[in-house]
Image 1 (cartoon, rainbow, N blue to C red):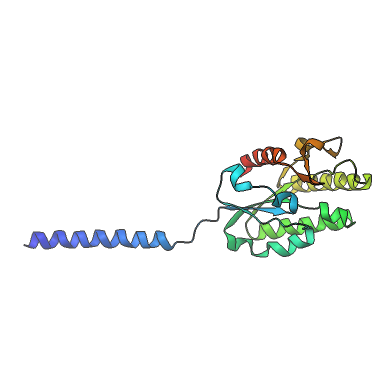
Image 2 (cartoon, rainbow, N blue to C red):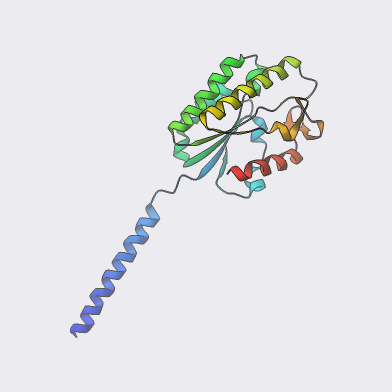
Length: 199
């Protein structure tokens, strides 16, 4: 009888320990492993989850977004359990005739805020425009991309030059264009394959 009671006590202890562990695992906060895509309509139009085959990608890009919109958007990203943020922003600022210096300062502020939230920023080059756009836009894009690349190197931030895939002679290739300055599905596939190793 004493032996039976002893084994009952042992079984109770084991069940208690197992139950406590299960309870703890169930209610433990999920790890910060979400990836957010930040930018304008160029990024918004891509089906990132489908193309990269990952369920932890959140596309927060907004149509018409510029660096000021994005600055106001990023303050609560940590609540989304985010650990990486891919950034492609700036073309709408250029079209709005905002100065290169102002755009650069805004992008730096975005990156600094992400770092404060312990989110790894991954910066992408601003895409060049189709040939019909003013050459002044091209000059601004080129200069800003050089500034962003140097800044990324200095700050040890990952910088991905996507123009090498979609542009030639500082002009967006016609075969990748959809609806003005957007990218088509062919370009989306190349873009997703380019970013996937960095996720």
